[in-house]
Length: 110
Image (cartoon, rainbow, N blue to C red; front, side, top):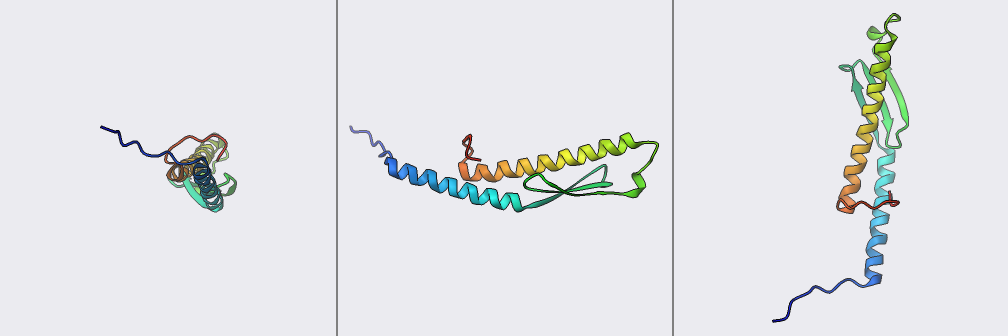
């Protein structure tokens, strides 16, 4: 009995597939870079607007939480909001790129 072994793609076919994947990834990265996200922290008293390139566009602070005697709390909320915004960009980028790569880790491609 002969085993039915699938024929491996040719080198040129593999190269075309890799090039297509790179093109798809570049297009998706451009789309993700242009995207904007808004994240809030502290129950919504601080809102951060960030791009897919992790550039902060705006930080909106509810005036009611500004207490000159407690700058530390405001600072903590700002840090939390910015960190959450960065995490949101990273997780969205990872999920979208994973759809293209099928979950393969491809260092240097994105």
